[in-house]
Amino acid sequence: MIDRVLELQKAIAQVFSNDRKVRHLILSWQDIDVLVAIKKSLSPLVEFTDALSGEKYVSVYFFKPTLHLFISSILSVQEDDTDLTKSIKMKIVDLNDKYNDTATQELLDMASALDPRFTLQYISEDNRGSIQDRLTTEMKMEKTPLETAVMPADDMDDAAGPKKKKKGLGSFFKVTVGNAAGPALQQDQAIALELQSYLQAGTLDTEQDPLDWWRESRALYPRLSNLARKYLCIPTTSSQGLQHRWKYCHLPALISETRPCKQAGVSG
View 1: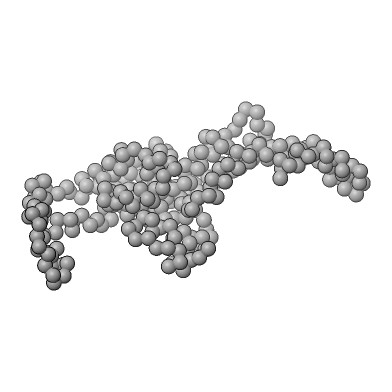
View 2: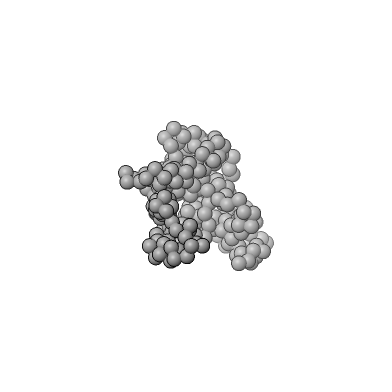
């Protein structure tokens, strides 16, 4: 709209000048300056908003990376920017002040850390230690199914039902191999190893789906995958309808069973 007005400003002025009733609507040079400043400030956001509107879901894990992208690239102040252009850009970036309280910042940092595309990349150096400590603390509260991995063969047969399955040669080594591997890691050691492995694994390609990655990596990171389910399901909208749709249509990507929208009672 603004592009079109600027492109046709001479023609618009010519048409308005021929009619005294609308002559006062002719754009002044101050009006033109304002439109130019708005265009220069918002034009870099066009491609970004187009990409954003094409996303199936946007969770809070996108907040910190998006803000960094705005500050460092899309809305960075240029040397030839007018004062008004700079002011508009700064007003948009200053939206971060709305989320400056400690609890919200910790939530955003935790969500960003649990996104395998970013991990600690967009968390300030001063906060990385506390976020890792919080991850460790919450991992201790998560239960894992690892203790069922070395269930004795007889128990497994009983649990399967009355029909007893013939044992294979490999069944005789289940418990033996577990004992031969040495004592199980203590909880603190297992948690530290899991977190360190995740943080050092390298980041996922930014165009890959983090929910799919967590579903495929549950066996490697059992506690962290539970935390990812907890934090990555938080939508960035306050609309109750969209929150309901996001929860029931997209969160199942984190778990083994998928539930279509129709089964969740959500349509459209």
